Image (tube, rainbow, N blue to C red; front, side):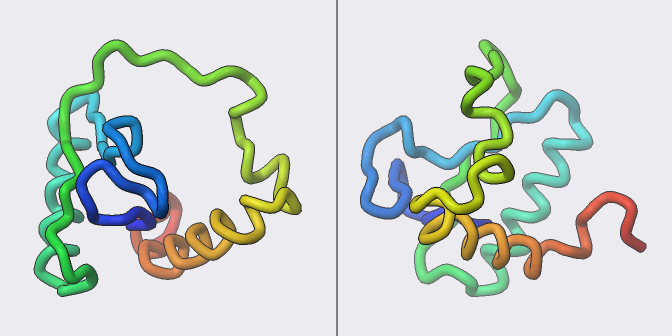
Length: 103
């Protein structure tokens, strides 16, 4: 995962709006989420428990257009260079085996 395992925190940001969550639409998605969280917990990757909530998706709506694909459209923006790019690279390396289309 590319998030802080702390409750309601991401980097220096604090509050419930920074909680980590996976919101599923079917039982298969829920099973995968719980499996990956259990795998991370067993791996010792984090010194603190992974507190990602896994809940059914409800009250969902898409973000505004200017938020869509922000990282892809703004790769040279300061936050993307300093924070997002290293996290995306780590994620891709760690979870490449889960990418669709790979065997």
